[in-house]
Amino acid sequence: MPDVYQATGKQSSAVIDQILADTGEKPRKAVLGAYCVYPGAKFVTQQQDEHIVLLLRAHPITNVGWLLVSLGMLLLPSLLLSTGMFAAVPGKFIWVGQLVWYVMAFIYAFEKFLFWYYSVFLVTNERLVDIDFKNLLYREITYGNLDHIEEPEMITGGFIRSLVDFGDVYVTTASKTPSLEALAVPYPEKVVDIISRLSEELEKRKERGR
Image (cartoon, rainbow, N blue to C red; front, side, top):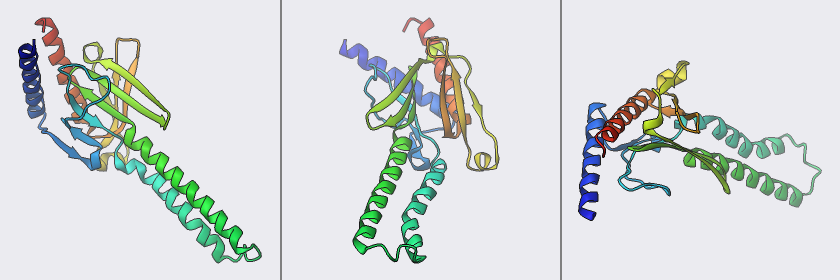
């Protein structure tokens, strides 16, 4: 049995390598870790002979909004103090107020970063895995088998999205989960192409009884 599994694993790797070569891709990490090709990573429910082909996050540019808000929160106390409106407040109360405010700013920024970093969309040679990070105690994980999907589609638009090349990828499935979505991911055209090729290859493999 180990020899059979080893042979099957080699076949799967060869198929993935060929699909990546056909799409002009190779194992790499790009866009600050938002677009990882064949990263060699593992996840909790990973099956035997299942490999992560794409690990996707929202494009880093989508973090600009909360980064600016965090910067504004850090600068706000100094700006307010410079106006003199708290001149009558004892210094120790000002210090405590600043400390509480900065802690709140840190928590806000840290939560936003975790949401970006741990909300990932995985494309394997068997299925799609959509992991949505809600908070430190809760994550929502949705699965869709590649042999149960219809043709994936992408939506791009707007100057920034076209300039930086990111967009939304939607995959309709025939399973209990009606659709899966990878929002604001880099290189959506390549993502759709790779998903389509993997799905076709899985269907051929099922027909051959493998």
